[in-house]
Each structure stands twice: as C-alpha cells, then as structure tokens.
Image 1: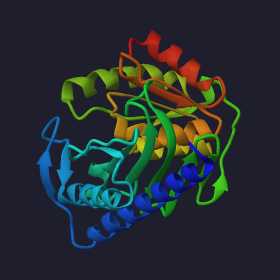
Image 2: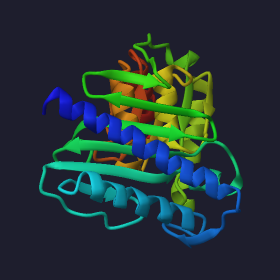
Image 3: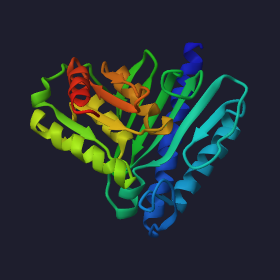
Image 4: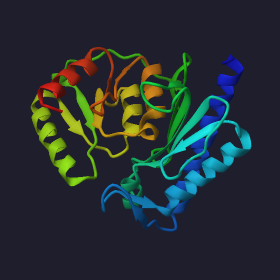
Amino acid sequence: MTPELLADLLALSRTLADGAAAIALDRLAGGVSVAATKSSDVDVVTAVDREVEEWLLARLAETRPDDAVLGEESDGRPGTSGLTWVVDPIDGTVNYLYGLPHWSVSVAVCAGPPEPGGWELLAGAVAAPALGTTWHALRDGGAFRDGSRLGPRAGVPLARALVGTGFSYRAEERARQGDVAAGLVPRVRDLRRLGSVAIDLCLVAQGSLDAHYERGLNAWDIAAGTLIVRESGGTVLGPGPDGMLVAGHGGTAQELTDALRSLGA
C-alpha cells in the first residue's frame, strides 16, 4: 500500500462523495417521494438513493474495476484486488425526504473484510451538501473538514458531554432505545438526534459533539465516519457483538460506554 495509492484512493473517495452528493442535492429541486421501505414501513428508500448508488457503482467500475463494492441499496459487486468500497448513497434518507439538511453521502475504501473488526480503513469522505461541508480522512494522514485539519481534542466528563444518538425504525427497538435515552439524559449535558450517523461521527471529530452512541448500524453507515473520528485523534469503540458503537475523544467514549452498560444498553 504505497503513499501514491493511498493518495489516489483518498482523491477518488472525495470525488465520488462530492459528485454523488451534487446529484442528490439537484434532485431535491424536483421533489422526492418514497420508492420502497426496508426494516419497517417508516424506514424508507427513495428513487434518488438508488440512482446515486448506481452512479457510484458505475464510476467505480470505470476507475477501480478490480475492487469490490458494498452498498446499502444494491448487491454491490465482488472484486479481486483485496480492496472494498463501502458506500452509503444517502445517509439520513428521512431527513432528505423531509427537506432537513442533515443528510450525507458516505464513501470509504478498506482492505480486508468490509466489516467493523475485520477491515483496515484506508480513506473516506462524507459529503453533506445541504450543510455545505465535506469531511475526509486518510489512514495515518489525518482528518479534515473542508481542508482544515481536525483534532485531537480533550475529552470532557460525561456530565458535561453533548451526546448524539440515533434510533431504530423498528418500533419495539425504538421504545427500548427511548428508555435508555431517558436514563442517560440526567447523566449528560444533553442529547441530540440529528438523523445521519455519518454526519454525527464527523461532528464528534470536529468537536461539535462530545460523543455519539448508536446501536444497530451497518458497515456503510459508519465506515468513512469511523476513519474520520480516529484520524482526528478520537476513539471509536465497537460495534461489538451487542451492536453498540460509541465514539468520542479522551476518556469520554469509555465513560459513556460504562454508563450505557449500567443502563442495560
């Protein structure tokens, strides 16, 4: 894995994320509607999700034909190079559908199995065009927001932490997560639920959130964001067998993990 190859992978991840995000932003002008549902009748997919993923697959077929691709809305494709692109065409689809700005396109590339615990994240980018921001990171090369280097940051005591989270679209699981959130609220500064974990992880990297926790995430949700947090000097714990991911700086991630464990999360 030469420095030249890593630089090329980073440049491509940024180009893909920004290009896909521009398509999604452009489609908003014509209106967006639900094309299908997934885990529940409120877990939606739009035609734009599918269009953007198809565009990403086509660009990768042209530029990196030997690499595998893992995407949210398709079967992706196998590869022979040992590298896998992990893409989320729109992270925060419900926000996108409602015209809220917290949605993003996440593109990352890894070596090894494309799953937490097995992958070696190499490069990634998260583009949030409605916020006018793109974050990116390179393995051992740092994390950046619009060209400005991020971190590292000191952790804060959990009682002073602004913490992000997310909820399942399955009603029973969401109810349990609500109980955990209710128990956590008295222990932290406050909670935020913004609706795109890819953005939330980038906000942890830049210090706009002190920590983030969430359960039930997929590889495409977190690949680029995980690398961005780690390259900013932060910590990402999990997701482990229980499916919980916790991110933060300093000791905040571990203190939050201990609090969640005490709440049965």
